[in-house]
Amino acid sequence: MLFDTHVHLNDEQYNEDLEDVILRAQNEGVTNMVVVGFDQPTIKRAMELVDKYDFIYASIGWHPVDAIDMTEGDLKWIEELSSHPKVVALGEMGLDYHWDKSPKEVQKEVFRKQIRLAKKVKLPIVIHNREATSDIIEILKEEGAEEVGGIMHCFSGSPETAIECMKMNFYISLGGPVTFKNAKKPKEVAAEVPLDKLLIETDCPYLAPHPFRGKRNEPAYVKLVAEQIAEIKGMTVEEIGEATTRNAKKLFAIK
Image (cartoon, rainbow, N blue to C red):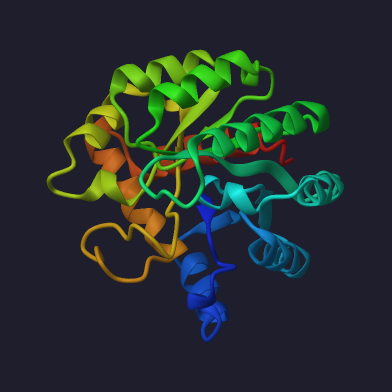
C-alpha cells in the first residue's frame, strides 16, 4: 500500500512503455499516484491520464523555471481545471534559483498568484524549491499559505527547515535522494519528521533511488524510498506505506 505523491508520467520518456511502467508500480504495491502538470503540454497530458486511470490524480500549476511564460489566460485555465474532481492540488509552484530563465521577481509574482488561486479554490499546494528556501518560506508566510497547506516536494533542506514548514501546515515529502549513500540531510529529516507529517514520492523520471541512480526513475521505485525510511525509523515498510498513504489521502481529500 504505497502512494507516490509526485510523478511525471506525462513526460515523453514514458511514451513507449507507459502501460508497463504502471503495471510494475502496481506489482510493487503502489495503489495511487499524483501526476504533476507544470506547463501547458504537461497539464493537458496529466488531465488525459486522470481520465483514463482511476488510481491516478493530478496536481496542476506552473513551474518557476517557466514563470516568465505564464499568462493570465494560463492562470484562468488552471482555475477552470481545478474544479475537476481528480485535481487534488495546485503546483508544482515555487522558486528555482538554479536556472536563470525566469527572473526572480517574475518567479515570485507567479508563485504568489498561484498561492492566492489555491486559497480561492481551496486546494493544497505542491512546492518546488531549488536554492531559494528563505524566500519561499517568506512568501508562504506573507500569503497565508498555511490556510491550504500542502507538500514540500522532494524536500532537501535541514530538519530545522522541515519543522518550520510543518508549523505552516505542510507535509514533508522524501524521494530518491534519501537512499543515496552520501545524503546526510534527507536521512536526518527522515529520522526527525513525525510519521503523521511524512509523504513519499519518486519525482519520476528524475532522481531515481539507489541502486538505479542516474537511470530513468519510475513509480515502482517508491518502494525503495519507503524501505529506506523504514530502516531509518526502525519500522516496517508496511507501517511506512500505511502511514504515508493515509497522510496523502487526508491531504488530497481522497476517500
